[in-house]
Image 1 (spheres, rainbow, N blue to C red):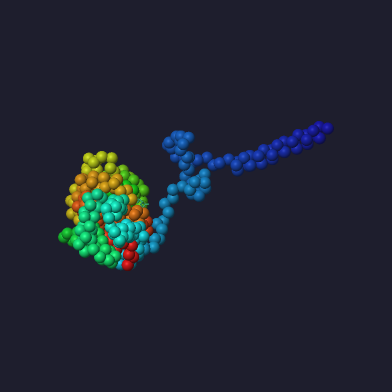
Image 2: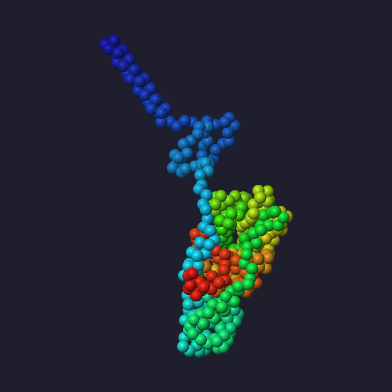
Length: 388
Ligand SMILES: Nc1nc2c(ncn2[C@@H]2O[C@H](COP(=O)(O)OP(=O)(O)OP(=O)(O)O)[C@@H](O)[C@H]2O)c(=O)[nH]1
């Protein structure tokens, strides 16, 4: 009995020891490893993830991929479209968006009897297309005079209209871009305008146009107001192998512009294009900002072109912006964007009149090569719906 009792007690003890051991083993496998902290590791708050000395699997941290510095992607440098072929392509697009204006005028002028009501309709058509009241009245007076004197067939009416529209748009203005620097330095182009008008996109597209002409280009992302604008510009630069000088978000735009122009001069760039921020909260602030950018840049090299970017779809709003910018900085050329999305090509005439500065480039789409030099003859042909 005593021996039996002893055996039972030993058996129970043996079971407990083995079971406990297995239990411990299982528990120790389930328990996470304690974080290895340096002796003076700071006390972690609930919001801070614990740090361990072990490298973590980047893909498995709560399902959220951590920020990993990936190696730079091997980008294929694109060859932008040349000027000739883009002009042909974009002329068609322009005729599509603006053709209604010229064709509408031609239909009215070709009526058997062009009476007062017809002239009023002609005026309305021009004003609706944003030509502006002054230029509209001038054009109508010229057309009345010439048709009274010359009269004639539909063909001659079309010729008169073409000539008068071209005169109104202005054939003689110098629309070349100031991209050539002095004394071996780079040309410096400041691109100004309200955010959203297509300013950054225009800088990217213009870089492509210049690259297609074999110019060495450098970009300055001085729109530090919006981080996305800098990223956007960097992407444009990467695609055509153009270097982009950037600064921190909220940093001093003038300092980025200065660095860009200095870098351009050092690296032997032909042209430095500087994107600027165009906050319009008040004129004094804008004047300070753009004035400083220009002053600071000119310590390195003279600014050879100041392009004002305007969104053609904004009508009178755009004209108000144009006036403010022209007061604070010496605008030397206008870029009209989004002409593909508006039938109001008359804004070309209105804005040139208002600022006394020629439209030099037009944006005709969101594609990377949808920017073209402005050509009055081509523009008027497009107004008349002619595609080639
Ligand atoms: N249809 C059309 N869209 C355009 C044209 N130019 C620019 N855009 C579009 O307009 C939008 C605004 O362009 P951005 O270049 O970002 O405008 P931004 O003025 O630089 O604005 P920030 O980047 O905020 O400084 C984008 O979606 C462009 O693709 C154009 O000529 N036609």
